[in-house]
Image (cartoon, rainbow, N blue to C red; front, side, top):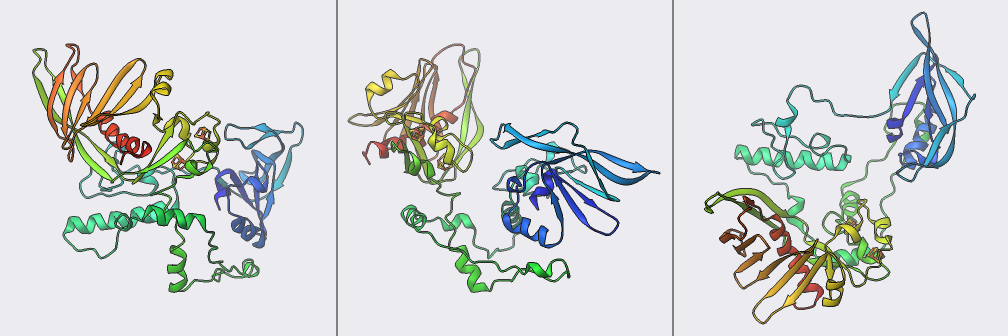
Length: 406
Ligand code: SF4
Ligand code: SF4
């Protein structure tokens, strides 16, 4: 159970297990079913107690010394904070202590810098070594680890020249309207039957295994939150978060090295990728920064601060220090970005983008973002990168949809 991350387990001579937990059972980062299962197994949970010292006699564990805690105020994550009650020490007799106060990955057989990979290739810098799960992402969910394992296997098969017959999730992109309709209906899931009474007596399987039909039906309830969340658009009382659709894109960007004599050298730069077809703009005219959308964001984001701020009117754009605005000209759309007094623009023509700042003028092929022309406008510039120009090409799509011009 996840509570094991922050608990101590004690086992006494008769095999009785006790878990000591600093907070209350309700605050355990464990599912209700896990807590019930532990209790059904006969495990005693001592809440609001903190381990202080291991008591030993003749080199053997005799007890764990603990103190009682009370909850006072809140920690940085908004959870009630346990504080020690002075003079409340007590001992729990035991002969085995299993500390379970954290989990970290230990890879000591390879240098960390060679284990870098991305979530598309899963391939590390060590030739034929692939990684996934926590080793790739840091602490994450079991389902991410399972998915990584499958996708890494696909990559390995591809590399070895073997065909793969597993349909990839990415190939099954959902229709946005269908997803939103699914989201509007509550569909109860399959109820996993657990026979808790068996727990303390045998090692028999206590959960029923659903049949194939049930599993397929269950998978259809997936709301594909990784593709389209949009919760911030539904919880904003002012409708200030706007969802727009783009085509998932991947560009190999280029950067420009400017020599002292003004000559320019174009080199490959980072790749730019947009995997989600649904993106969000924050509409500055409507947002009063109440923070409600942050409360509901499942990824702990602050959409009203993190998302591009888009101004629907020139007045709003002028009155604010930062943000985007769309200018609709006869022969082109121009996205204007203002920040700290400087202006950057991206103009869209039928086959190309033109990116202009105080320091650079550049033209890109629209379908590949390859540079067609570039000029450094100030002598101090030595290197020019275009990640923001690529981002602006995505925001431009949102701006056009927000303004209703496509
Ligand atoms: S902070 Fe802005 S976008 Fe977020 S809920 Fe409040 S008004 Fe809406
Ligand atoms: S900002 Fe948060 S709530 Fe909005 S779409 Fe992204 S994850 Fe969902």
